[in-house]
Amino acid sequence: LHVQADLAAGAPVLLDEGQSRYLGTVMRKTAGDALRLFNGRDGEWRAVIGEIGKRGARLEAETLIRPQAPEPDLWLLISIIKRDALEWVVEKATELGVSVILPVITQRSQPARPNAERLQTIATEAAEQCERLTVPMVRGVQPLDGLLRQWPNARPLIAAVERDDVAPPPPQTSSPAALLIGPEGGFDPRELDAMRKLPFLVPASLGPRILRAETAAIVGLALLQRP
Ligand code: SAM
Image (cartoon, rainbow, N blue to C red; front, side):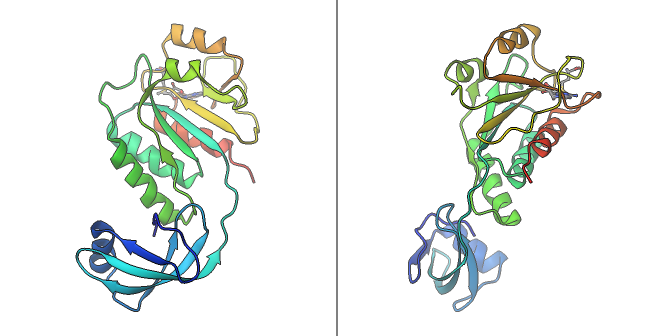
């Protein structure tokens, strides 16, 4: 379970109403039961439930099970696509180890704005499910052009451009890095022209077929995995 509290031997951990209801009702946990906690900083801890009720719960961290290990510093920039597809991408990108997810507005992205809180909850649940010890940060929606104007040069931006472009596959880059995926309708030609002039942008192809944006995100992240 992901918690906000600091974790150390004997540290008290208080859970809010939502989390204690989940533990009591869904997980059927009662006082005396043990569970595993992480907070993104202190590794994974075995904790025991002291008290649990409808309004909250009090746990105590006992022993360190897994120390915190360094994780890739890989960002995913994804143009806003249909809600279900975007939510699916957030879940899968979390499983694939991304550190930051940035939904971006491009010329042809979907007009609806995603619910950042819901996307963050999906990322948290996916992190718990796949047993990573951090939760990716889901940033608020930003226009791509503004983001690129203040882009840190030291972070290569691997842009999945269309298959027709003469572009090599994504390079074996070490972190920090970022992957950019366009919307269902692809990038606008003028947008692509402007992007190509950026020194930190690495155009990359994901193969000869047109992939849906959500497939492209997963394929790109899979190709950027380090052993
Ligand atoms: N409208 C575009 C077309 O007809 O060619 C297709 C856009 S595709 C559905 C959505 C996004 O996925 C693209 O903007 C790109 O970022 C990525 N993508 C899909 N297939 C790709 C490929 N073969 N190589 C690189 N990127 C790809």
